Image (tube, rainbow, N blue to C red):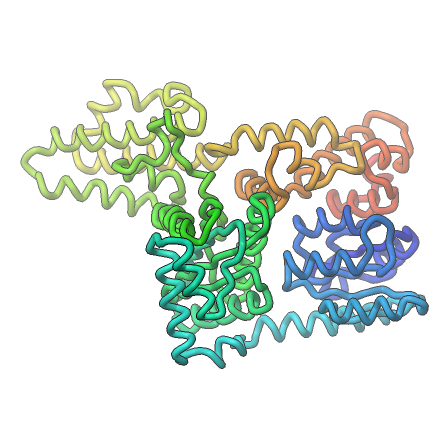
Length: 523
């Protein structure tokens, strides 16, 4: 299904598109709507639609501005412009930006469907085609290309003086004139470990970055590559790094059974510090045990605080593994750890006790890092009886260690982790106190918790298992159901009371959420 998002300041236009198309009978799903570009941008960042349909003239932020920003932060989105006859010059400008089609008003649902089908075919072509970057094709295996790759390797891995780097970069037509840099390092996982698939992904990413002049790409191996992003400010570079990481994630997901983990280093204030940002990103990638999931991490997610010895200790491999391990990896962790018993069969009791205590200490450290106490979470493992029983035989030891790790990973996954526990709690509290304000959006909440919108969006969805929009909608729908049950208020009044500015859109969302209209639910 292709997700479609509508932006138009005329309610009647949005309502017509929403209600006249039989979405269930098409390959499209109606993903959301907004009345102006500013509100739309916040929702688009969260929903990540496949197709954007936008009016060209709107208050606050018009369709041209919205299209330019969307193409920069989510370049895969196909854009259809709605235009009046006297706005043709605007439409021509929009096409230069990279929109896919424009439709003159007034239009029919059939006109719109034809345009959406054209857009969907382009999406399919992009997905099914083995993308080869024209620039990459023309440069590869040339002396210039080889010199560039060698320079990028040095830039990432070897600290050097800024002056010498800038001079060498200029000779290779690489622009390092920027106040801020950051390195994103990505590790791709393909279930079949197919080299051709990994090659296709690399080509996709090169093609996506081809017109992004603030991005430098360096292929490290078939399954790893680094990108260096440049920007004019520290705040902007954080937003752009998460945006590009999401672009990478989108391109990787186009290949079957493929996922990616991207690590973002801290901002560097000169070319000579780029290697530090790369080293930080590389440490995150090397620590991360997750496979089969898409994740984005930044250096601040796991940074060790000066006065803390609890966060990912260098000589505490079990803590490192438990930080990101999935339940499916428990058997392998136990196998690696318990394998030490095989080297000392004559001293099982002593070695088993040592290994068990190591596991208990690692679990305790992880619990403390996540803001709790092992006495509250798993008190049974601290008793003498548990330890004595667990080291009676190898089979019992394996069973108990397995049980501990399964339990702690499940506990970890059910709560917000580490540095962002307070951020998530603060965001949820703000949403629950302000859900009835129509202006509550990704930007307002991210500003409240002092993160950039893309960073907050990524953190919230990874920590909570749902997007910000889904959480806000859940809160609003819960309150709507309560008001329908306990009051005689009209659904129109309830819509306004819970933060919807359009009662018809509220009814649409309510039915999508519950399977019933507000009236049916009340009955």
